[in-house]
Image (tube, rainbow, N blue to C red; front, side, top):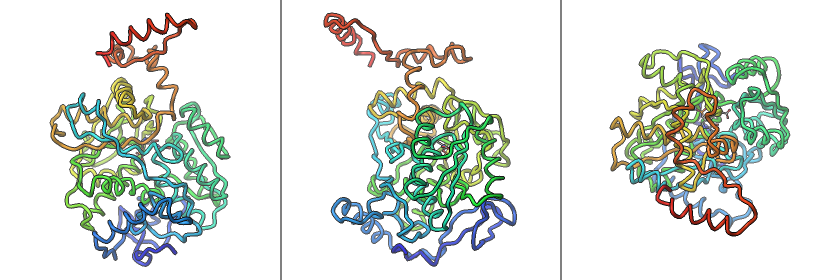
Length: 455
Ligand code: F0G
C-alpha cells in the first residue's frame, strides 16, 4: 500500500441519500437513489504543518531519489488526501507540477494587478484531465480491468488513452462525430484507443456508454467516477502550496460536465477543514452562453433544478448540455460563495487571444475564465485589489484550427456573430505572406514597429 494513514478511513458516500456503499456499481451511481458518489474521509487527523513539510520534502526530492515515482507526481505527492492505491498499480506520467503564471498584460487590461493562471494544460497530455486520470486509471488497473472507456469532448479521451496504454489496458473512446478538435482526436488515435465517432453529441455518447458498462466488463473513466474527482483535487492543493498557503480571493474555472469545479471546490473545503488554509477562496464557474445549463440552473432556478439543453459552442470541450456533476458543483459554489457567469463566442475568442498575447496560450474552453472575470469585475463581484487565479484547463495546441481561423479573421464568417466579431479585430495577427525578399521583410518589420502601440 501507499504510505497513507487514511487507508482505513475513507468511504464512498452518496451525495443524495448519504448511503455509504462498500463498492460502486459500473455506472458509479448510487444503487439506492441513482445520485453520484463521492469519497469522504471521516478519520483524518492530520497536523497541517507536518503535511506541508512532508509534501515539500517530496517536491524537493524530485530528480534526486531514483525510483520515487509517486513523489515525482504532482498528484501522488499529496496522497495523504487521496484514496489509497497499491503502489504497483499506480500509473503515473509525472502529472501535475504545473506552473502558476502572472498574467501581466491581462492584469493591466482588467485592472486586477494580482491576476494569475494555473496552467493545467502543461500536463503530460496537455490538459487537466491527467490529474484525475492517474487516480482513476490506477484504480481500474488495481481492480484488474482489461478495458477502460469514456465519452468525451476530446481531452478525457486523449488522457484516458495515454494512461491506459501506460498501464497495458485497452481503451474505448466515444466521441461526437465532427465536434472535437483534431489535436485531441489525433492523441486518442496515437495512444492506441478504439475510437468510435458517434453521430450524436457528448450527451448522447454518455447515454450509450452508461448502457455499455452495465453489459460489458468495461471500467468507466468519466468524471462520475469519484476517483477522477479525487485526483483533480490536487490542482487546488498544489495551487495553494504555490501561493505559500495564502488563499487567493477568487478561483475561476470553466464549467462543462462540472467535474473539475466539483473537484477544486472539494479540495478547498477539505483544506479548510484540515486548517491547511485559514479562509476559503470564492470559486466561480463560467460557461459558454450556448452551453449554459448550470448558469441557468443557478440564475433562473436558484439551484432547484437543471434543465438539460442542446449545447452549441465553438469551445467544443465544454459543449455539454446535461452536466453530470451539477449538484456537486452547486454545493461547492454555495459553500465558497462563488458566482456563475456566461460568456459569448466573441468574448471567448477575444479572451483567448489576450491570454495568448501574454505568452501563455490555452484552448478556447479555458479562455472562458478570463472572459468571465471581465464580467465579474464589471459587476463588482471581483475588486481591483483582490488576487484572482484562472484555471487554464487545456493547451493552446489542442485546437490550432480555432486560433488560426481567429487570427486570419474567418472564425466567425457566416455565423450569427459575424457582426460582433469586428470588436476582436485589433487582437488579430494574421500571417503576412511575402516574396522571399529582404526589403519586404524590413518593410513589414518597420510597419509593425510603427503600430506597436496597438500591441
Ligand atoms: N476545459 C477543457 C479544456 C475541457 O476539456 C473540459 C471538459 C472542461 C474545461 C470542463 O471541465 O467537464 O470538468 O466541467 N472536457 C471533458 C472531456 C468533458 O471529455 O474532455 P468539466
